Amino acid sequence: MSAPVPEDMGRARLSAALDELGERVFGGRDGARRAAPLLERWDREVGVHTSVDSGHEALAAARVDWALCDAEPPGAAPGDTWAWRAATGRVPGIEPTPLYRLLATTQAGIFEVWPGLPLLLRDRLRGLSVRVDEPAPWLGESRRAAALWELRLAFGTGVAWICRTPIEYPLAIAPLLQRAHEGHWRAPQRIDLMPWRRQRLRWARDRRGEDPRSFFSGL
Image (cartoon, rainbow, N blue to C red; front, side, top):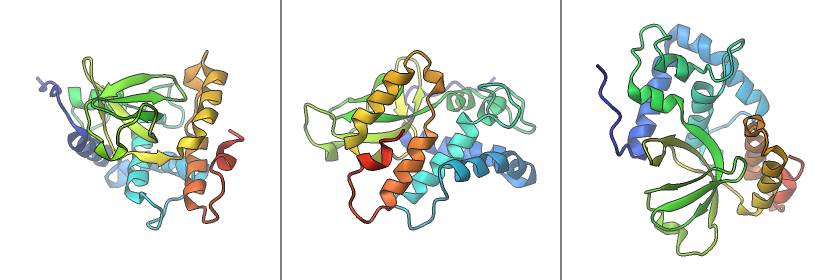
């Protein structure tokens, strides 16, 4: 019988677990075939990251995590991701465990971050609000949101954990995210992070110092 998921995972353990599951599912010749159509889709819809991009390692992890945990393989039913298949014993050579099921149900979003301990996170696209016991002293003290981060969260019994290094977005676009949320609140499953990721990559590469809202205003 598999051991239960520990009560306090922490970012380092979850990040390592995602890396391990990604390698087990997408490693080798069979794994490369599984990953290829999904990673090609990311590169087409978001863009190709390079080592000169700021936060390249976090972007590379987000790309693989999306292919593993969020995107369905061609022809698959909604929600039938490679991570879910691994968690339910449908990937040859991978024994399902409670930890893999936890990883398969992680959620990515763009969260407004309110400082303090715990941090208060509010997904500006889906409306989800959660608290995480993770210190972020560099955010300082504030009565308002201090940052806008793309995060992947894992959910335990009454708790949430940050899985990866945050990817920063310009806080100035929070009203645009709210507008998109209001346009989709009746069907949050229709919300797609890919256009926001594409524009975030273009904004981060901008060298002219344009108003960041100009990159996201059409979404």
